[in-house]
Amino acid sequence: MLTIEHEAVIRLFQERPDLAAGLLARSLDVQLPEFDYAAVESADLTEVTPASRQADSVIVFRRKRPGADPEPVVAVIVEVQRGRDPGKLWSWPMYQVPVITDPRQAADDIELAMLSVIHHATTPQGPDILNALFAALHNLDRDQGGMYAEMVRAALPREIWDHLVRHMKTESYEYLSDWARENIAKGQTEGKTDAILTVLAARGIEVPDELNDKIRKCRDLDRLDAWIRAAATVQSADALLDDDL
Image 1 (cartoon, rainbow, N blue to C red):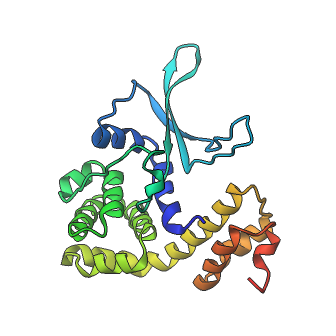
Image 2 (cartoon, rainbow, N blue to C red; image 1 turned 120 degrees about the vertical axis):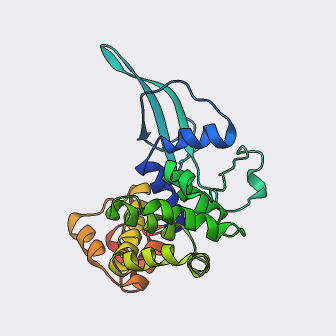
C-alpha cells in the first residue's frame, strides 16, 4: 500500500523533475544526453501482454528542435525503495544518495539534500544532514522553505523525525519551531489528503468535486489515516466515507 512517506519522495521528483539527472550523474556516474528540459510523464508501463506495471514516476528529458516538436532523448523511471528487499537485487541496479552535511553543498542542490536526509536519516550522520538542510532552507522564501521542510517530515516515520529534531542545532531548531507553529498542522492534513486522492487516482477511481472538498476540509488526522488505508482497497470514492471504515 502506498504511504505518505512513499508519496512524499515521489512528490519531490515531481516538483523538480531534473533532480533525476543530477542524482544519476553524481551518484551513479551516468551521463545523460544533452537536453533542454525535463517533465513528468505517464507512469503506466503496462505492456500489450496482460502484465501490468506502474512506476512511481516517469521523467522524460527532451531536446528542442527548430520547427518540430521537442525530441525525447532519454526517460528515467523513478521507483522509491525505502528498505532492503533481497528479492529486488536482480531487478533493480544498486543506487546511492550522497551524504550531505555541508550547508553550502545543501544550498547548491536543495532537493538532493532533502533526499540525503530521507535516505540517511537513521545513520549517525542523520542529524548533521538535517542541520545542513535547514541551514540551506534559511536562504529560501519562507513558504518554499516550509513546503520543503514539510515534505522531508512527511517522508520520514514520526519516531525517526522526532529523533533528528532532538539532535538539531539550536538555530535550526528555532527555525523549525517558528515554521512549525504556523504550518505543521496544516501541512499534515494537506499531506494526508494529497495521499488519499493520489492513491484513488492511481487506482482509476474518480472523486466527485463534492467528495473532494469534504476530504480536503477534514482536519481529523486519525480519520485521514483511516481513509488513506481504505483508499487502497475501496471500489468507489463514496465507499471511502462509509462509517465502518
